[in-house]
Length: 482
Image 1: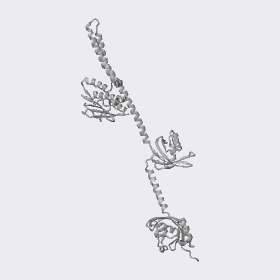
Image 2: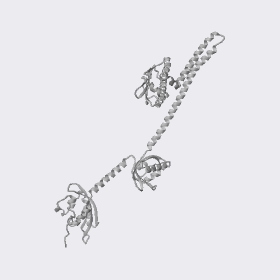
Image 3: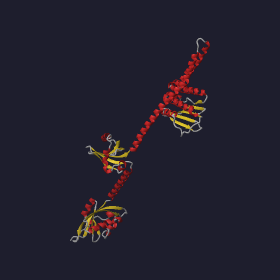
Image 4: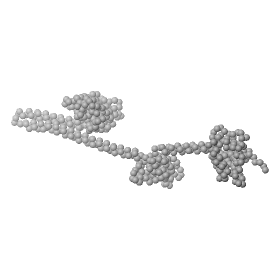
């Protein structure tokens, strides 16, 4: 009988193996020896051919933690449990690196009693494939970790051209944010608020037609009647002949929307308070005019009427009462003019801010209880004369603060200044009165009017005071040049 050549010396076999990139081996169960069609150095970088035929040669290169795989596999052959196998295990390469092998084998000879004699198979280096699999696993783990920690729900949405649509992926946090199990993600569509369904579909169709990212905010209506707000943002990941695939993220914005609604309510409340303050200011102004007319003008006119009643045409001595009556009428007219000037902004536009404020302070100073002084006043007059809205705001603020000083400060002197720099006009009003604690004082109508007037011209109000330290009001108004 012709003796078979070693597998690695069979020329046709070697050529075939080079083409498929694998090595054929044959294992003898009785001698525990392994023959290779291709020399082992091609796989293991091992050059001592004398060692390759020794018992246990191949097993000695198996990575220690993987040797049990071959031992268990051989036992299954010996016990008749298997006739073939496919294993993946590691070997220690001649250069010290660890490489992965894919080992496939089949029983080719056995005794009449069924005991294995020889088996043959192929061996392939799959290190690159295993490294790629490891990288894929690491990438998958990274994605899973990100999906578990991103503050929202990551999803993939598929929109078919036939009108069908579905979620092909959803991250686990769906349950946490929207109380829906990820396996039941498609039920989310059934939770859409009835009033939002039309706009939701329109927004998707617009994105499908234009290719632009899809953005949407809407509500979910739950069976118990509760509502959650959600926001979604996604971009097209793939577009083929059958469908469009979107990748995106969805977040719960219920708290944000509740806060937004609360702010809108608060804004309306502030508007209502401001309107009420304006109405109250108007009522107070009317009441002040009423008191001025009743207490001053009415008394002067009543006096003039009494004096006129004393005139007797037959008594020349009574003609002196005429001059007295004229004087009372002149005073009444003067009072009416003062009241009119205080209310009518046209007076301001006619004689200017400096003259109007100066005339107002002259009358106050005449009373002798408090002395007002104008310092550096009029430095910003050129811009104020152009910006009538700011000029009126400055005048009304001065009026309001003077009223506060006269009513509450017990001051003996006060200073009003108006100056400017490159960007701002600054109005300062400072008194030497009793002052007050800023933390405890409530904004009365006078202060509310000051803040409202300043806000109308984008101004800033800075109030400084303390018990026994008087009060300083600084109003800074930006100059809107050009």
